[in-house]
Length: 229
Image (cartoon, rainbow, N blue to C red):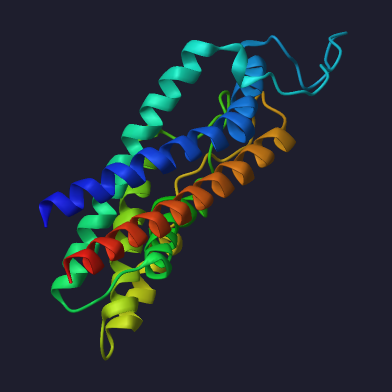
């Protein structure tokens, strides 16, 4: 059992890690690099006192090979860790007679995306460099609480009986009824259009990665079960 878990997680993590970093490099990292230009003052969005507005345009992520290599290494490590958690969940589900394949693995991946990315982003959107936000501790606490409540809520909705799914819906909604910490005003150096573009692409890349990871990990797990049958 442990060997199957480790093998499935390693293969899925390596494969999807390459996919994830490729998506990040092509679609997300250029926007981060552009945001850093506004953060450092190399580009200016609002024209004041004779300073002209800088033209838009994302730098290439390939311009920093060291950063690219470290991103690939970190991406593979992170996706392997996520794959290990998913496959461990498949193993627990198998103890209760639940069969996992590529399709159900994809659903697990979507649930993880909602828990770790989409639900927190409803209160705290992904942030570009230079964006001004509320105190870090308060945001981290709200993010952690949202992840825990969303994960527990989805589990109750999916597996609970009787009134438990209703409690799951309430858990998912609770952090958003409390509200994420925000400043009383809006200001920052990055263009709002760039920030919106970054948030959308970050969530899209995360969704694609989790769906791919869940599908591949589920397929590998199911194939292992078939080999043992």
